[in-house]
Image (cartoon, rainbow, N blue to C red; front, side):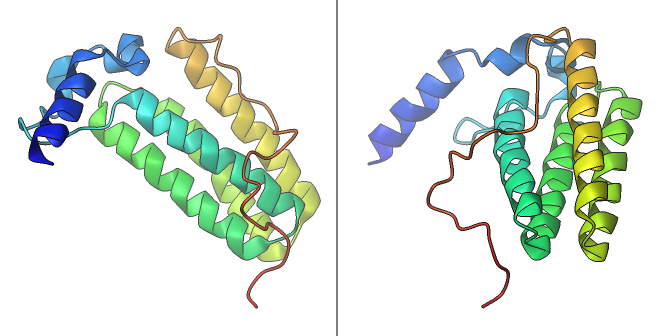
Length: 160
C-alpha cells in the first residue's frame, strides 16, 4: 500500500497541472513547497472544487434551500481563502471582487430573496470571468449552470 501511495504521489508531481501555467500560479517561490510525502493543492485543483460548489450554490438557491445555499457560500469563501494563501500573487482586488457577490448572496439567503440571489450570482460569474481574464485563461468562462451533475444530491427542502 505504501508503494502504491508513493507511485501515485510521484505521478502527481511528475504530471504538470494546468493551473500551474496561469500567471497567478507561476511564482513557485510564493507557493508552499510540499514535503516528499505530502501534496499541495494546485490552483486548478482549488478552482475545480470551487466550480463544483458554484454549481451546488446555484441549484440550492434555485430550489430556495437557503441553508444549503449559505453552506455553499461558506465553502466557496473557504476555497477563495485557500487560493489567496497558496498563491499570494493573486491581486487582492480580484479576491475582493469575488467576495462581494458572495456577501450579497448570503444576505439574499437570509432574506429568502430569490431575485437578489440570482442577481448576485450573475455578479459572481462576472467576477470569476474577470479573474480568469486577468490570469490569461479567459477561455475558462463561468456561467449560470443549466443542469446539475449532482444527481445524487437533493437540492429541494431544508432540514428534515
